[in-house]
Structures are given as C-alpha cells and as structure tokens.
Length: 508
Image (cartoon, rainbow, N blue to C red):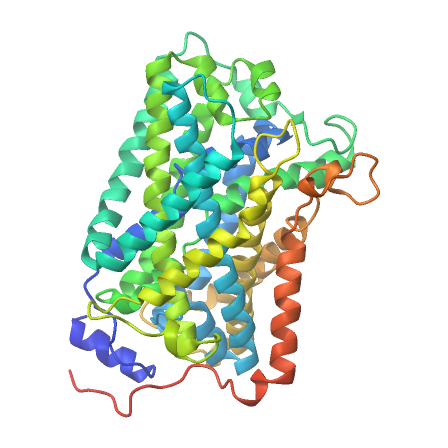
C-alpha cells in the first residue's frame, strides 16, 4: 500500500493526514517491541515474582500468561487492520459501539499510557542509580536521588520526541537490535561466567513466599492469591503493544504492517523474555542474599558475577529501559493528540495542535508532566522493601488501565459478530473463542492487581502504613468515577466520538 493509499484509507475513517507518514513496517513493530522491552520489565519487576511465588511464578508463569497476552494481541491485530488510526483503541470502541464506549476506552487507555511511561522511566532511573552505585559504592540508597534521575530522564524523552521525529524512528530500529543483542549478551554472561548454577528442579519446582500473606508456600492462600500477584511480572512487561495502533497514521501500509507488528512484538518478546528470566534463575545461587535484598535482580548479578560483567548487565538494562521510555512517550503523546483531536480532553485545542515538524508538542509535555506527578509518592517507602510500593502501584495502574481499554473494543467486536467488516488481517471464524478468552483473562488480572501487595498495606493490620498501600484501585477508581460523572452531567450532550476533519476522500 502506498502513502497515498494510506492517506485515502485514513480519510475514509474521517481524518486528514496531519502526522508525517515516514515509518516502515519494521519501525511500527519496533516501537511495540521497545515498549514491551524485556530489558525493562524482566529486570524492574523481577522481585515481585520472586517474592510472590519464586521460581515457579517465573519459569511457568511467564509462558502461561504470555499465551493469554498473545491471544489478546491477535484480537487487537484484527481491529487495527480494520481501523488503522492514531486513536486506535478508543476509535475502535466508539465505532463498534456508542460514544460512551469510546469515552471510557479513551480515558482508560490514556491513564494506562501515562502510567506505563511513569513506571518505565522510574525503573530506568532505579537501574541508572544501581549502575552508578557500582562505580560509587559509598553511595547510600536514596529515593530522592532516584526521583531526580527519573525527572531528568522524563525531560530527555520529551525533548527527543519534540525535536527529532525522524530520529525517533531510527532509534526505534536501533532499540530492537539493542534488545536482541543486549539480551543475548546478558544470557551469555549468566551461562558461561558463574562458577555454579541452580538445578532444573530449583528453576521449575521451587516456590517462595516473601509476601507476608499466608503461611509459607502451601495451601489455597499461596496458590490463589500470592502466586497470581507474581504474574504481574509478565502482565506488566508484555504491555504497551497498542503503540502499533497509535503510530499507524505514521506507518506505511498500516492496515497490514501494524497488525503484524502488534502480534509479532508480543510473540518475540515472550520468547526472548523467557530465555532471559531462565538465565536469571539458573544464576540465582545465593538465595539467602536475594531474599535479604527483597528479591532484587541486581543481587543475582553481583553474587554470581565479578564486578565488570555485573556492571555491564546493569548498564545494558538501563539503556534498554531508556529506549523503552522514549517509545512510551511517543505512544502516549499520539493517544493524547488523537483523543484531544476529537474534543475529549479538557483544553483539547492545545493538546491536538502540531508544530511545523508535524509533532504534537503540547501533548508530549502534558503527558510527561502528569507522569511525574503520579509518581511523587515514590519519594517515600516502607523500610526493608526492594522498591517503593508506589512503583508497583503505578505499574498496576498501567496494567489495569491499558488492559481494560483493550477489553471494551474486544467485547464490542465479539458482539458485532458477522457484521464486523475486517481489514486485510483477520481472525476469520476463530474470533469468537479468542475474543472470549481475552475478555476473561483481562477481567481476572484486573481484579488481582487492585489487591494489596503487602500485609502492611491492608487497613486494620497492626503494622499498617500508608507507604505500603497499593493506591492503584484508588487512582483508577477515582478517575473512573470522575469520567463517569463527567459523562453523565456533561459529556453525553456533546461527545459524539471520533470527529471527521475531512469533507471528502482524496483520490490517490
């Protein structure tokens, strides 16, 4: 499909070609692959799975949950093939259902994208601090220093997105190879350099419960509450793949290339991530030290390797996370631009404006500003934890917001049945069973990830402290209540879903 044909299809969907359509199919795949980033999530939320289930939550949990996420990806690939627009998820919901469906989907998607940007950049700041600490061992742990790094990284990502549209596309492609080669180097170092490795039995059968919930690793509390909390590692790492849809207006041959890019980014990340995580587990020989550090993945490297290879792994992960955060800002700003273009965001004229380089500058600045604000609670943490509970809360907000946004159009597509007009990439008759599986999985994980992640975060507990509270349900709940009230009192009278900004379809 030529650029002219892409523009014609976009006009049929109601929009002018305002963003520069310079991205290849590989670049489209690259942005989702970079946002998923096995060098980010596998490192930053490893401790969550280690403490909530141990090796089995990783060795078995990762491939199991990856299959469910791939099914969600297939369902979304069919939708992006039919509707390749920057609004992506929300546009699908509004067209398959009613304006109210588009309203809630758009806000959930926007919340999720802002939260995933915040969590990735905060994780990057944490690993930057860990890497520098290797060179400055006298540094004491400091949440304020990490937060300062976080703010600087956010600013850098905003500047890159504002001033270098073509550079972003190039960096996305570099990011793919950095993740592939970097992951291979990490795995190679952990295979060949440690003097000893864990057994197959440890990696695939060992259970650990450092959560504080339940009594050890036996009984229903462990298998049905603690262990599923460990699955946050997989569910968080493999997310953000909706970026393929958000940059579809900038992608050539989007109806096919964005659909393929979406599911392939999940598939290849699932395989690569599992290999990396298994390398972590086989190298995790000093279990006592890892437990004492709160399950910090860096302890695996520093106990299994000498200073130089351990530092190299931390540096590889840090740069991978930097690429990931840059891609998150790109995706978030395109969603903000598209949702604002249709009048849904307060001050929409400001956020839907593009500069001379055809870049939504104001949307970039606004998204990064909100990401900074929602992470402020990370300046405080309960003693003895691997990371501020606020980090896990932001991670949970990202997962819940994004996956609930995915659920609505998937459900509407299921309801549409044979009346749905597919694009060139389609599920055929398999859509029924795949859509149903996707819906059930999203509902289940959304319930788990609003639950307390520590007994100290449960009201009424003798050791209760606000710094241990998972504020994800509060944040998502308040926003949902707010947009529901806004819809009832006002928006239902003026929000009509996607607004056409073309009067006729241009000839190619």
